[in-house]
Image 1 (cartoon, rainbow, N blue to C red):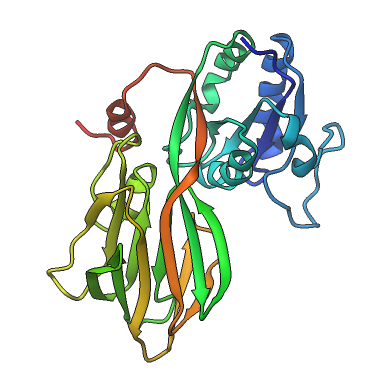
Image 2: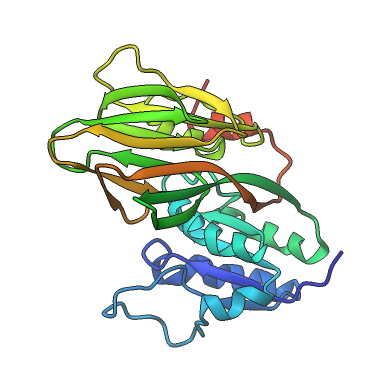
Length: 290
């Protein structure tokens, strides 16, 4: 087992009331001999009163030498952390304090299992990510990593958006509706599933393209090889823009002529696993199947 430098603990302050889960986790890890740093996953409102008895460090300062990051919150907290951690090659473990917590490894009632980190009693799941680029003419105006999905939608106004989806330069879909989702297998159980897409095992080698509320009844989800390059453009739109969002983050306004290009990234997210359970056990538990 490689010696742990230290573990970053990253609580969502709006989920972890009074940082109670964080404090309990700090106690478990301290008793196991693991050094920790506490870093918020995002900037909080200046009016938010952080506790004075917890020392908060900066994420960009601590990540380069961290051995692992543990997130406390919902899937959104983990997704937010995954991008920064992946770029540094740091594995991430999720502790669910949210509603679904599909990607989390532990519930907040299972914190005692964190002690196993000290002995290296865990495994790592490598999760495929997507590389997302938006070009306007010859300029790249947006570039991001994606663990779950890329959503290109009409926004809040009740009008449809017309999109053309190409796979390796060949038209795969043209539809009018609320938009389209391009998802990884990990993201198949998120927005794509709500839009009628299939459940796909996380270690499958595929990219999902799922139309959202398409007006054309022939429009269906397409599952492609992870070797494909997906491009999305608007074909017509009275408002002349659509909105692109990666992993539920801040939306980018796309104009007519902009091209969103999505392909498999060379980077993989590393998710820490402490339990020996099937993906379908998680599906059955989270969606209460059976």
